[in-house]
Length: 229
Image (cartoon, rainbow, N blue to C red):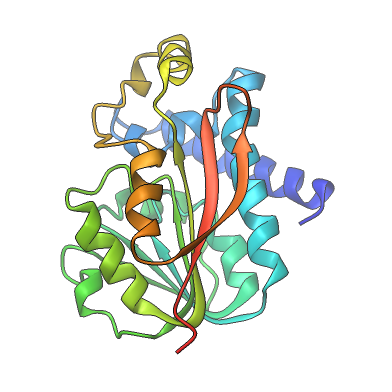
């Protein structure tokens, strides 16, 4: 996605999120990243959106896809983009309230299906059925990381890919969180991206996409490829 298209995408989504926040209970939507994606600080806002742009550019290179899973879709910030990259998109989350709020301003495309993970966990999804699984800034939240990663990799078709991003949780990230405001407590984070990457390397070949930024990184983006057979 070129810069002008991405900026238009970002502007549209930020506007929708700010409308939702204006009518929502304070703190209710923090875990879905609403505050981050609409932050008033240009630096913080740029950083959060930059990793999405990086992931989008990576995903776009292998498009089109037959079936895409947006694991932990949150506010649905990636869904309009993913809907253009694949024939069918499944949006899965344990809390669909954030997405329901946003879709009042940005309706879902006809090829997007939403599933409540409390009723349809990933263990019940068909194995070897997805060409792409999008898991941006979600795996730091899950309780059982090894089991979740194994289940996600089992959902990939041969040569399919799992795209992951997440925070480093290093000291600079912690300082940035305090500066950003109380809604960035990180109390719901179980781990940082380094642990996720280590666990994933036990299951698959991991391809580095980007680090934001050296020498003290705040976020990392990478992909894991499914088995060729």
